[in-house]
Image (cartoon, rainbow, N blue to C red):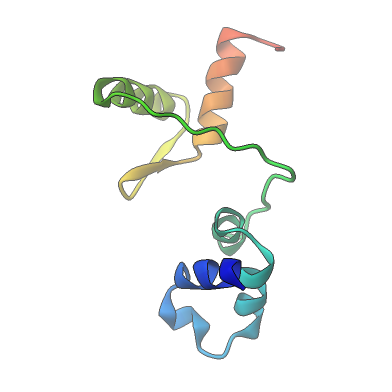
Length: 96
């Protein structure tokens, strides 16, 4: 039930008006997968998480590079970072 309460808070209130399908999605998925599903996309199965702690200047460099490789600004962050990072890796290490 704890996961459900976390997931449900991420949904805009206007979407919950009696829509049981959304409640079911929130119960059965992580917040990350839920966001992907609500965009009409399919989450990556058995995805692994990579978390980085960067100095501000290093983050600026990472952000600029990911944008060059396909990431797009979304709010204060970036979307499509996975695609951008893999495009960069493909350039540096083709076929790896």
